Image 1 (cartoon, helix red, strand yellow):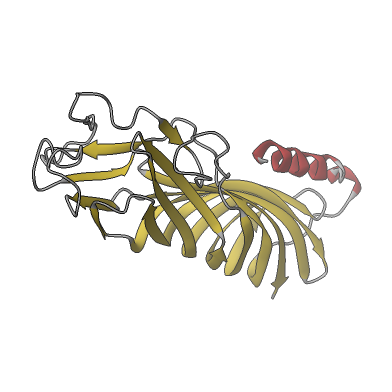
Image 2 (cartoon, rainbow, N blue to C red):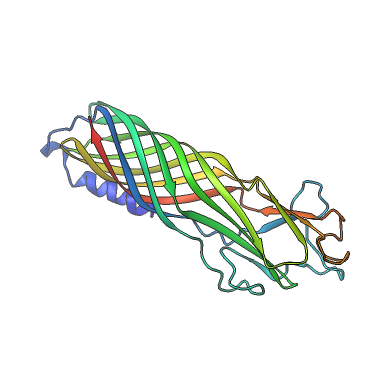
Length: 273
């Protein structure tokens, strides 16, 4: 997706030779929006990590009364289709992405520099599922909702076409959830929803049509998201239950991936004052 938009920007620049056209003045303020598609990358290496002695260190192996790995069935990236199989997990949920923005540019020669602020909404969800030998599944998901960001950008005017690169910071509202088919143990979640900080990088291009600028944009958004925890207690399970064998107070677990990444491809429209 990223290479597609970079190629599109390069094609647009080559299609409008500077020698044949009059340079456009990009200096000024603008406001507008973008709409497109957002996706989350599949991470086949992601796992659920366990802290079975509650020392704050994750990476322990949860074992049965015989010493066997209670999660030897494995993990999958996505939603579970059953309680017993890692095969055929549903993929992450991708969807609509849209935002409004306002900013300004300054042009000297053919170089254009500027910045903008933006607020957006999206429907991107990332999940991982662990499968125990009980059998049971343990499903952790997170969804990026509203985002507030600020980005700088720099580009080159080529006869009314502006290919550019952009980077900045973002604060995103992330909601995390947990479900399981295990009905014996007790489960409690903490820090499931909150605002996370991160960055954005990308590139695109715009084409001027009078006061309107129409274009396309690729953005990668990455926020730190490692606070979500699940506390597992004995519940109605026996004292030999894997989650309470090492520490009778239970086990805690979290996702192994500490960042939540999304990729978006949008069409942009701005009115330049």
